[in-house]
Length: 108
Image 1 (tube, helix red, strand yellow):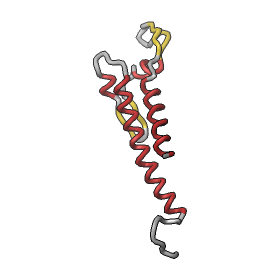
Image 2 (cartoon, one colour; image 1 turned 30 degrees about the vertical axis):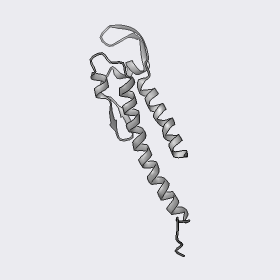
Image 3 (cartoon, one colour; image 1 turned 90 degrees about the horizontal axis):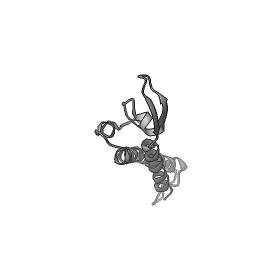
Image 4 (cartoon, rainbow, N blue to C red; image 1 turned 90 degrees about the vertical axis):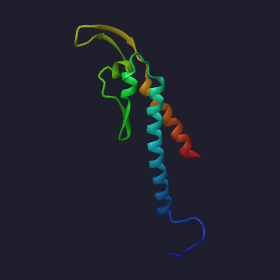
């Protein structure tokens, strides 16, 4: 291969660069989503906010009631309690906003 001064024109080099940028951006987006979720989650005791964590490529929480807070719940739970609770979509909104910002950064 001919060695030119300046950026590589080899497509595999450009792909490797993009792959590295993408991985870095993916990590940043997941961290952003976690921070945003913690900022917008409804807080009573702080346990739900404090439980939001990054696992691999996702934000998650081990607390059983987090799903109900995020998506809402209408009906009777396993303990016989009745709920008519609207979802707050704190995880959904945080992930979507972080994804949109991430795509914009990758496009620039």
